[in-house]
Length: 251
Image (tube, rainbow, N blue to C red; front, side):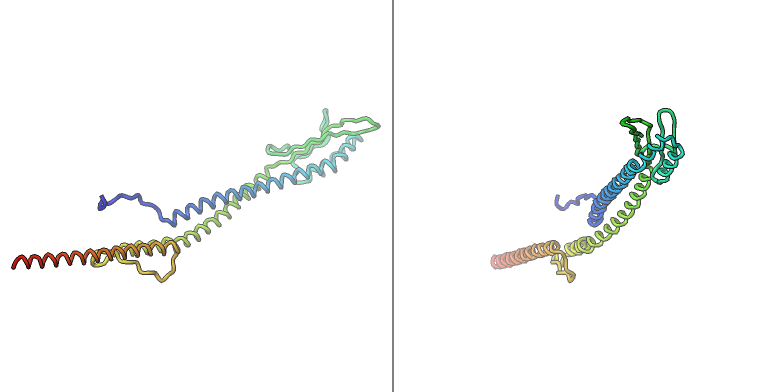
């Protein structure tokens, strides 16, 4: 029935729901931006490691090969130690099938980049295989740095998201929620004839949609009041006519 109270499920504020959606979208975007930025950083740093390894191959491999051919083990160790002095190098070893000629550092666990180049010497048209140069580069430091950067970037973007959510909440509350609350209070006011009272145009400007809302409401109330006045006048005329009829019949 129309006069029966209906049970509505309590819902949260429009501003709160909008801010929640904005925060959710901004959080997802922040996560995606942070992940993409770290991915680019990872690609850049790993590419730099590959270039450094290629530089070792281009600059030190021939020197080590020549020293091994000359059986100058001391010079091999000097060159290998110089390569190992690079902080990005975790492990270097010069070896052949029977012995280790030089070794510095400890083989790192995965994840890592591991390079092994053959030591080949050409002499009088003959090619001699002298052994191998192995260089390992650990990626653990890069992963740890990227993890810290990811956390810091998420914290920063999270703070920006919270500020954005607060700004959106304030804007929605001022421009939507408060005017709607003002309109809802006005539509619940009735006059002595138990008729709705038209909404007085507010001094503070509102959005076009809200202006359209209370304008249509006022138009509807105007028509209702006009209809009510006509109905009341018709009823009054009918009562007067009945009264005159009764007076005539009583003569």
